Amino acid sequence: MAAPIEFWFDFSSPYSYLASEKIEELAARHGRRVAFKPTLLGVIFRTTGGVPLTELVAPKASYFAHDFERSARFAGVPFRHPSVFPIPTVNAARAFLCLQERDEALAVRFLHAAFRAYFSQDRSLAEPEVLTALATEIGADPVALARGMQEPAVKDRLKALVDESIARGVFGAPTIFVDGEMFWGHDRLPQVERWLASGPF
Amino acid sequence: MAAPIEFWFDFSSPYSYLASEKIEELAARHGRRVAFKPTLLGVIFRTTGGVPLTELVAPKASYFAHDFERSARFAGVPFRHPSVFPIPTVNAARAFLCLQERDEALAVRFLHAAFRAYFSQDRSLAEPEVLTALATEIGADPVALARGMQEPAVKDRLKALVDESIARGVFGAPTIFVDGEMFWGHDRLPQVERWLASGPF
Image (cartoon, rainbow over all chains, first blue to last red; front, side, top):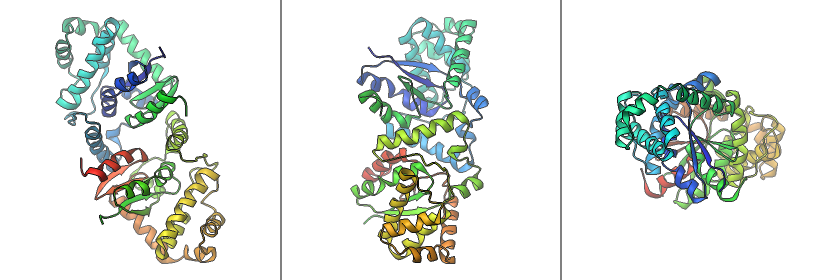
């Protein structure tokens, strides 16, 4: 089986959410799996001098707020703009990694539950209680998760991933790598699909 | 017949070029015409605080240089990165408007010839000789064009269009309006098409 495609995301990125709802089916159509890799846009923006979508100049910021919702409807994905946005996602990313070390399928269930909670149910992933509630909802042990998120190994793993993403030129999310080729944004999924279907173009 | 869709562009914008090669067929599939409207990204960026793609932080800038070419291949549009980029496009925009006042079809031929000259033949539209050569190539009078570009009415028309684009929230190019709904970027053409096909979503 060919190498998995890499899906770099931040739980506070609406376009990461939209793409997360499509990427596994897309990969499966071409015999691939998805390696989900969290990063932290806050750190990336501080390091690279980038600007979050919400801190853009006024006309651009209001366009994007509209585009999130329209793009979600276009993709057929439920979306409700969170009342607090963006949020710190370090805890959510650690929770994902903590689960991923033990059970990949469970971690992916958490990922989808967390994205949907934040972007369609207005549940802030910055709140530890939301994360433990999500653990319960997907059948994970909330007490073990709360403890695991604080483990040095999990913290180190996230730090290493953020460093790796920056070293590899990731400047926003979602960023998808297919056999080393980098694609940024949910709107590049058609190009990802062609690359998977018929190779480099 | 329904109102034309508006296509706001800058001759120095690669994604405007890519979209310009698709927009008329797309509109025609839904019984629409295209109203081509030049604006000047240089003025827009100065006014709104935006940043040209080429002045972005390093990883983003090099990604975009790659994305221009890959997106062109994906779209099946010839593309060669111009050796001078970006360029001032005030003269090219005035040339387009000058032709548009006399003959819409001729102006549209000029638009396509100019975009292709810059983005596939490395001919800089900042050079007045390139503009007059293009006029000759599309069957327009180069002397009349050179004179027309300097007319106060043409200069005023461009200034009015730039002001209008800023007033309507345009912050980049291409920007497409369909019955008042704004879409930014060639990668929103699929959304434009759905909007045209089945109305607001």
